[in-house]
Length: 187
Length: 341
Image (cartoon, each protein chain N blue to C red):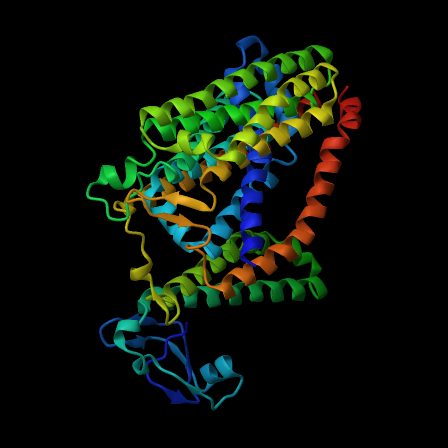
């Protein structure tokens, strides 16, 4: 899933950065030597196969795979950092646990987990393209011959958007009902 | 190993018709119940269905998984040629479950309850209808491997009298099963009597719409009726289902809940088995006279036996837990009735 251009031993890891689709280089990233080899094989000098060793027809869309991967890792690190801050405050500065800024940070981090899962999902689904079964079946060969697939996409997107709004609306009503019963006592 | 996969396929179709069917039928009954009694019917259905309705859709999922793994050609043919009824069914199942859950759990009981009920009852009618028309379509000999027009490819198989009549028949079967099942869930004499009357009515409607299937087969000039009447098993199964009807009514009159449920379940089994028997082991009858059967459309042995083992191990877990689920929610009804009052 991580993008490496050339096959090399002791491959490095680039954190952040924006992939350039024309030069196939990642620009503005932080380079950590030998890290990729370690992550992939647990060995700092292992050989990692680069994209160039695969036929270009079998390349996944690079930017769509690379950016969610960075997002997933970034969000994971952010959540871990918040955890560390929490542990630090818990043991050392308990009075800051209910500091407005810290609570705001925790509240902001609420969707991080979901976003990271979604981003990871994008990495696996887009990153395995053009295969739906690796080396056996291409996605383009697996598509149903039924015409008008775009309508399915529209119908199901609409259904799920509708359901999401309904879920929000329902949650709002649950909270409202709770407030109502708290104000008026049990009725 | 193939026979194990076939057994589980047929069994899960039956169990979905029985348990899922009772749920759909309950929605159909609510749709057609008189305005003054709607509220009462609704409450009864909510109480009877709420804890376990999700478990019943498991059987549809198992059916689909068995087709997908063990009979991929049948799966492919159905999901291409019959994608329109399939999509409608899918959306109906989503809408129905959502509306039912919302109606049950929404903290505010206001006008929105009406909307939930409308969506719930309408989709309770739509899903079994399209399920039936889909089952009709696969034996209507109108599915083409090389169709020339959109109509021929995606509409003609299910948009014809025969398939539609099977759709109607499935709706009425489900309503029949639900009306018998709900008798046991009603806990006052008036409601119970109302549902006993209801189940007699649904029985007649079911028998009548079964007649419509044969009539439409005659009008469509397909050989379903002919094959049905010349098949010993189909005939004896239907005879069994019919002759047990008076027995069902006498049991209903005496108010024996579990006996009546078991008899209705057995009658459903006879009806479905009678339909299976007509073309067994053929599943999809194609327009050119060929057929996809459970034997010629099966996956390689390795796949089938892996699936069969999974089904055997899985059922060792599923059946005891399902039994427990039903025991907890269905048999302890008397306790919950006491608590409610």
